[in-house]
Each structure stands twice: as structure tokens, then as C-alpha cells.
Length: 306
Image 1 (cartoon, rainbow, N blue to C red):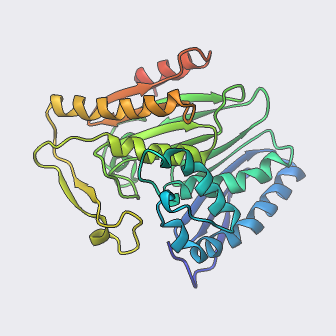
Image 2 (image 1 turned 180 degrees about the vertical axis):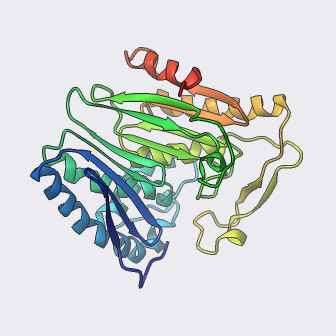
């Protein structure tokens, strides 16, 4: 993570939408306000945003440590990262960096929660923090394969799924991880999307569940993480570089392992739901009793109608 010498940038994209960028931190913000409250919230959010990257860079050495080393951080975003990852650390290797994108979004969404804005989101490269007042909701779309979502992609495919999050659900964070994304992964999932209490928790869980979607099928290419990124927190652990077209048996095995991991964390109350995608196949881990579950499940399973 760098960005020294590059000034933060703010651009208004529409009446209630903004773009903030500083080095690797690239945010899309949207709120339903249309009043002075919204303008004040954006101004406060922008002021805080400008200090986020320098504070994270100052603590990178600590944030790349395994949670087993009990890292101690000073900055509020760094503390969010540690807090989000700590519940997973007793049983899995994880560093606070697994929650960095979600923690940044969580840090900034607070300004909308304090302002009286009815609903807002901050999308940090696919890791999303939400603010919802009673009665409000958001529809969230998933691309299982990031390559198809790029503007240059020649594809007629629509979103793979759309689901709703409403204010009554214990969900204020959505995060996605997988080997095709901007972060390194130990697994082979095209994508794993997790719903959790906050974006940082969803970010950490998505990382671990995507790592678990794995098998040893022929043709999968892996390389030491530190040969791909010299500043990685993964050291020499093997990460996925390429995945060939897999036989159905390998896909089923990898997704079953991921489902087991997701179910484990859901039963411990650390995630609300998860959708795991691999080469056109999907596994869902959903709540058993919460009323909106049926809506989430139907949206994730049924094809999206344009």
C-alpha cells in the first residue's frame, strides 16, 4: 500500500454520488439526502478521508503481522482491521490486511450515520459499507467473474445475481474475494461474496472462505506470494495464479470445502450469508430463520431478468 506524493482526489459524479481516490484507495460514495445534511456529511467524510492513507502507511509493519503476534495499532482504521480479524485468528492464519478495504469503508460510513441521511453506501473496490435507516433497503448485484465486468469485456452476460439488504437485517457490510480480484488468494474461487455486520468483518470472512474454495486439480498454477508482490502480508505462501477449466468433480469438491468454511463462521455468528462461485457453479450459505433469507436465496438462485 502506497500513495505518498499523490494527492487525494474528490469528484462529484451526480447529485448524490461522489468519487474519492488516494493511491490504492478508490471509493464510490452514494447517499439519499438532497439537502444540507448530505452536503455536510460528504464534507466531513472527505476531510477524514484525506488522512486515512498516511495513517495506514505509517502502521503497515504492524498490520502485516499475523494476529497470533497480537499486533497493536494506534489509528482507528487499523484498530477496526484488527478487531474484525481477531475472531478468526485463533483457528486460521490471518493478518489485519485481510480487512483493510472494508475497514476504510466502515470508518467513513460513520459520517452518514451521524448526519440523519436516510441511506448511504461506500464501495471500496467491491467491499461495501452500508447505512440504512428503518424502512430503507439496497439492492446489491454480484459479478462472479470480474473479467466480464470490465468495460472492455465483450460479453452479453448480465449480473449473476441481485439480492436485497433491508434495515431489519443484521447486515451493514458486503465484501467479495477470489483469485481473480485485486488481492492474492490461496484458493480458486472466481468470487465469494459475504454479508456481515460490517464491511471489515465481511472482508476478513470473504478472504478466508475464498481461500477454502480449493482443490489440487491438474493445471492450477500457484506461486509464492512474495514473488508476485514484494510487500505482501502472505510471505511465501502459495497463491493462485491461473485456473484451467475444471472437471465437475473438482468444482464440486472445491465449493464443498468453501461451503464448510462459510457454514462454520455463520454458525459462530461472524457472517450472515455467503455466495460462492466457481466456473458457473454456486454454493449458498444462508440463514435458516431470518425472514429476508427467502428473498436473498431466490435472488441468488434465479437468473437475473434485465
